[in-house]
Length: 557
Ligand code: C2E
Ligand code: MG
Ligand code: MG
Image 1 (cartoon, rainbow, N blue to C red):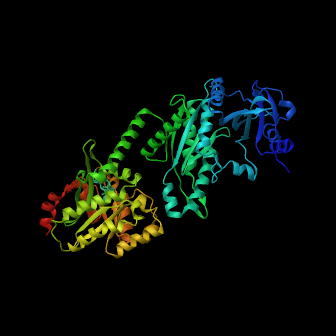
Image 2: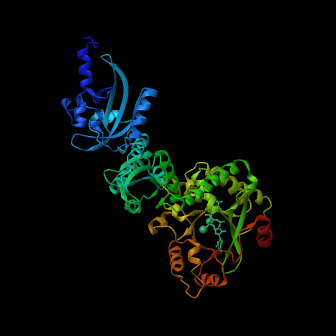
């Protein structure tokens, strides 16, 4: 059989699984195939001889069509997303490609399209992989951008607006790291459903990449946006169940409104992304509508984070370590100290670790940062006196780093040196993070402990440790968070939580360190409650090495 025969071609085109139409220069429709009918609802006789505008939704502006014809004239092709109307009146997103062709001696155009709102059948699935995310079945980034382009090119109805939401799951990486990719995939699917449950059918939800989603939300007024933001945050609060496990998700959401924050799709998505970043900075699990001030703050963070990466690589002199002594509250003797990293940048000045540690985490620089810390300590320890008894040096370790195989390598030399001095090394991990550690991480911690490294839970009381979990942790020390100590020692002193923590510690045979003791009354109250160890500005602020050596170490010896 020869394919070149006219009839064969005709059959091929007729049965092709995309809607195809032929339009003359006039423009008039001269041919439609079988799929055209399935997609649009029109049979051949109803459209042949009529202009292609019978299919229009009326939503797009004349400029949109002008740009389309211009592209056709200049590059010989147009492809994109356009909203059209079916015979039954339904408006639907159509993926349309147009090419010029010579047909029966006439200059014509072929339009090939499909309905992007509805996908059925294996074939549709295969064909749409380029536009849809196979995991969630949502439009992918490139299709979303097309949706945005098409939305921006529509007439503005009185008062109606739309917003672009940028949604990023918080801590998704740890779900993947700790429970594997299969669980991660399950969580992403649930997150997609969660987002869809909040918005309406007309709103477009897409998965941009990894744990990033985006939505085009239609608004009647700006108040609608706040409501959607709140509902979305609320929807993420409910636990999702994947396999047999419950996961507590949260999301940071940024929003940008058309046309206030941008007139093009690209600009809107970018601003929504920046607003999302502001939501992350504001503590995650919340939404932010784009604002200049947030953006400025975000840009500063961005610069700070660039500077941190550079400084860690090239300017070791900008970092040094300070030490805050810890005391036996009964005897008043110093019994150890906590090493705290300091960063002094030529442009930004002194930057608090509360600011730069999270940046280092986000930029994957936490290993390099701990390297700086350990090098700083080792340099200082060259002139350390050895000690008898139980003198401890505590360092802070980011929970992220425990999964890092290089941790042992960094800490190794420090551990040896401290051993030589007859001291003990203690690792502090914040409570909020320790709760998320996998079994493998706990094994790593156990190995450290078996080697003689002490493990402390930092900022205890701010997380959600269950007692059962605590009991199984390889931990010896609880550090009571500053906020509970600050409630002690005044007229309305509230010692209930501190007492409770002391009770838990006693039951689990753990030691306790109170942090942030700022006045005598707090000190006295802690002594009265039988708290063993403490640190705080009252006794000593974090200090440079030479000073702690002179004040603490030499006399201690
Ligand atoms: P943290 O481990 O809970 O450290 C105690 C923080 O409380 C220190 O702040 C210390 O200066 C401050 N502090 C101590 N006594 C008092 C007091 O009486 N009153 C008040 N208001 N504050 C007191 P710093 O040095 O700014 O560190 C902040 C946090 O940054 C640390 O909290 C720790 O989580 C983290 N960090 C510091 N250095 C490092 C480091 O080398 N590595 C890692 N991963 N994190 C670090
Ligand atoms: Mg600490
Ligand atoms: Mg602390």
